[in-house]
Image (cartoon, rainbow, N blue to C red):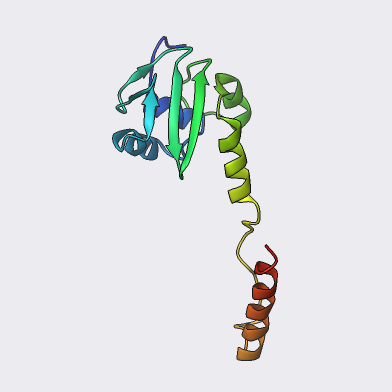
Length: 132
């Protein structure tokens, strides 16, 4: 195992970002901080470093426990970092995520909804969105 790893490569390998280019871009935009300072994509991290990531409006915090350079499955990536994200940020994320279901689907071959069906769908959605 390496003593130091590039921060963009590490964030990609532990699955914080979907691709390495997205991790690199986040570093360039100042959304990644290493030890409280903005981190360039080429910044090297070591075991024990604290990484702050701003992603989709949420402030996430991680501590590097093991260094890996290759992307691995989520089960293998989990022991490589410790999630230090504050409880209020986790709650904010959970409240944002609840109710975000997938897109509506129609049965295959049913075609587009008629005008009457569309109005019924809109009324149904308005009724349930008003209960919040």
